[in-house]
Image: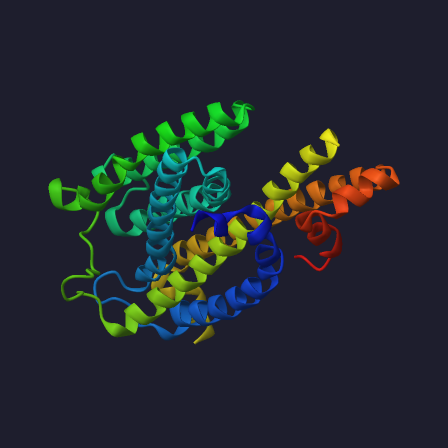
Length: 235
Length: 75
């Protein structure tokens, strides 16, 4: 099964896909922005500041999802010695970090009118900041270690340590008394968010997911060409 | 309506700065990755051009190399 993940087989797809993904991203983002900024209603308590949710929540979800994917790929890649899994994980990390920063900054902007402060050492916010540190360590490790085997080992350790933080982020609002509100959307039970707000939220999530796919494809192609450049040096 | 879209009952500055920060971050990341991609691709083309005919023929026999050389329509 893993032979299908060989770079040579994937490159013919990944080299052609970005332009289509970019087109789809622009279309979905335009719909999402229109919904989020114009068509969706204001909140009865938070008024128009609730619109920040449409960039803050998808960014947080995607940064958590990407880190979980990176951990999974690193562990499976390390156990089964699949080098391409590390390449995929490495290519996912930049967009994960940027989404994490977006979640922190937009959360801070949202915090000012809602809580009266830009920052609080609240469990949810602090654990998101720790996730950003793990993303940074992961990317720095790839830069520091030129020996691939060492880089595989160190980045795997960083992701295993970092993944412990992911359930803490998710359940921090339930385990501790935090300024941050509890989750409004639950997969297993009824969501407390109205459909008029859920639709733009899901549209923006789809747009952000497409953007991370676009960045992943471009970064993956870059990494692959880098490997091929080294191959030409050896000829 | 336009005024309401900008000022949003006094929350406009917060909402617009959050959306602007997000879109600027997207654009910056996109440009950084695109520059890195173009740099590596140009390096590859330059290295490929400097190979002698025998080595170039061998390198061209690899499907990925052919794809990189032929694929100029990438974003």
